[in-house]
Image (cartoon, rainbow, N blue to C red; front, side, top):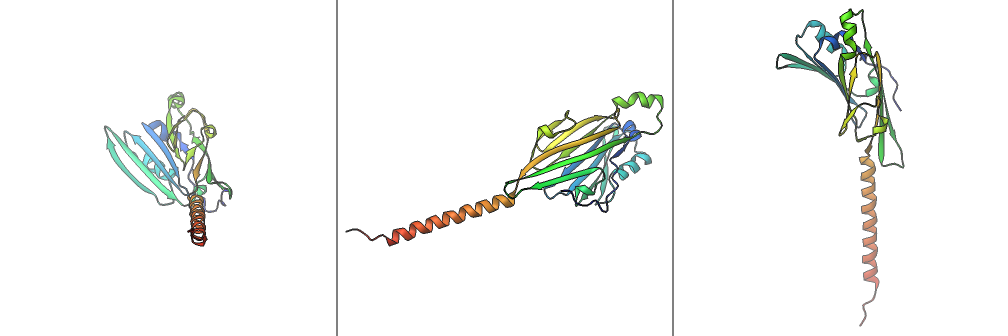
Length: 216
């Protein structure tokens, strides 16, 4: 169950269209850890790093423990900013459920995020370009990803990561995915029980051998 949403970080799952329109490439990356914490990273490739671009990137990854940087790629500049959060549910628009059962050796993770694109007053050129303006959303979950849980369904899976290529022609997206991972505490307990059982059996065998009288 998600924890209470006190001190929610105003991570606007609100993506400015003008940022998408002016950037050559934009990727939003979310990595969920086994304890429910997460890393959020936004990376933008742009021909010109204007003050607007920098401010919008900062607004997309506020609070937490933010770090940022940049490097040159060809004729473009790549800017990135990431932040670590102790609980993924502190991110506005994100709901993470972590389900554990006493009788199951696996833990289930279910993440839902509502992404919304912020459209200002657009010029005719911008309106025409909106359906062709795309960005990537990448989500990494612990364990094995359930392919049937992925929405929108048109996505690629590589290991623990799901990647969506989304169009700015739609104002809102609901991202969902679930995964399941082995519980190491459960595994450790099972190994301890097996070792204890082996020790008991070996002890009984040794006791039986010493009690049986030798035949002449």
